[in-house]
Length: 83
Picture 1: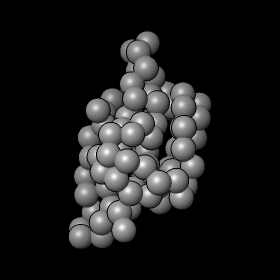
Picture 2: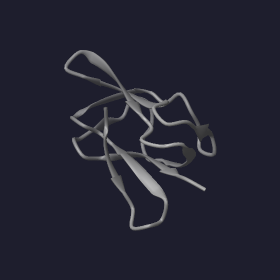
Picture 3: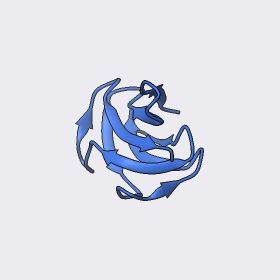
């Protein structure tokens, strides 16, 4: 599971990379409605695929990475806002 940080009362959650890796899949687009626990990014690290899930229900506000991009631990991958 990805580590999550909430913004200051803005109703946003950020899905961060739990480890360095390669983004191999982004199954959703900006504006998509997600449910709690739904996969928002697939990260390959140490030859394993890791499904990073949404920490809460909401709408994808921003996708900060693209498929094939290498990320570092702690990088923000997706921003999810709740209504």
